[in-house]
Length: 149
Image (cartoon, rainbow, N blue to C red):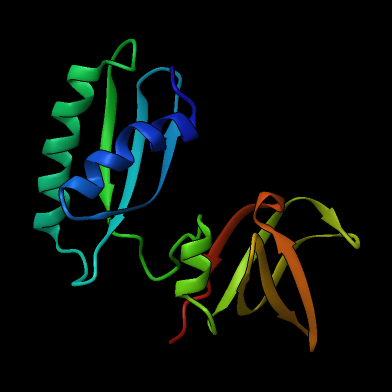
C-alpha cells in the first residue's frame, strides 16, 4: 500500500495530463479504504469534472493496482477552506488568512492563524498578531485557507 506521498506521485501526472491540478488527497486504509482526491483548475470545478476524473482515475488505479482489495475513490473540489500543500499554493494565496497546524509545537503553539505574507525560498511567511514569522514547508503538517464571508 502506498502512503500519501506515494499516491500523490502516482496520481499527480495523470491529473495534470487531464488538465487539472491535484490540490491534495486523503487516503484512509483499513477495511474498505477510501481515497479522496481534491482537484482544481483555473475555470473552477463542476460536478462533471469530478465525475470525469473519478472515471479516469479509477481506471488508472485498477490498472496500476497499488491496492490489495477494494477501495472507494472520491473526487472533489478543494472547497472554500482549500488545503495548501506546496510552495506554489502558498504563493498563489498570498494575502489571505490561513490556519496552520505544525508538525511540532513552536513557542508552545501547534496551531497558528494569520495572514499569509508570501514565500521566500522554502519559507512560508506569516503575520501573526503584528509579528512576522517564518515557517519551513517541512514544519507544516497541514494548512488551509480561512473562509471569508
